[in-house]
Length: 375
Image 1 (cartoon, rainbow, N blue to C red):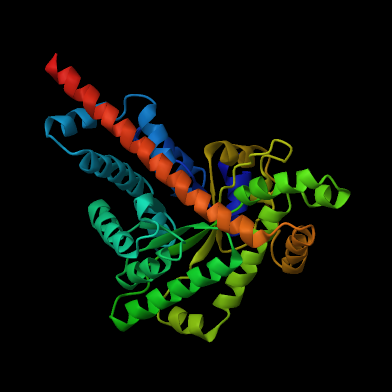
Image 2: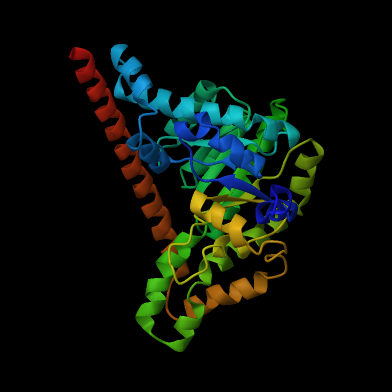
């Protein structure tokens, strides 16, 4: 099989932009990311967990850590330099995809500090600083979809900053995210900002929903609960796509599109399978539809490219079926609102913990560089 008729290419032909949920300096400098781009990968997402993992493996950061230590850089300065350098290099690798797609793809995401998730002003300031520091047009600034994040999303977009909205779990919050997106573009238009280069995706988390709901279903031990196992993550995402279709069908969006705006594409995140009882390509095969992004950890991407069945639309026209799955869970006494609220809170907490892990890794690297220089 050639790369031109691979499952990844078929997935792209079906309208799904294939992104990689991973980033490291070794990957960008070894040519690994460029090779993935040749196979059809047109974007990259990152998060504090990914950066912490990259720093803990290999010596790719040793020289920069030594330079930063010698210059007396603070811990915060070192973290900023290391992460933005990685993202800038990835932006450069994917710049051809950005140009070919007319600014739609070739995007690389970097997240505002997770501790700012409930700080609107701090998030806006961080988004501005990261946008300026990386200095690449194909950058996405990741802003969490907390209540406090919503006005920050609007403010960033209004200034022409492209945004990846992350940690979306509920349909209601997703509607608020889309409203924040539209408001930001309207404000940008009013300020005379060119809408065409402004990009945005809305990252809807999938597998984490099943990870939260399935144990609740298992505890019931009924045939109906067993039947619904593994259905809610995909159902929730399919309902999100229906909500997206409703918004892009409005006169409000039509007016922005006429002014050159690009839609805020749904992005399927958390697509690695955590329950080994499910196919390893589940959260890709069941969410194929034109105009979306699927960001995958490398293991999932390779599984899809090896044996993925991805040539057909598996989303359009299935909103009623999806709603029935969620209603079935609710009928068993499981509050889906409580599930999504908990997932958002836990998601922020996990990113904060990962950010601390990243800081600890950088601190250890700086300390080791200082000790080495003193020998």
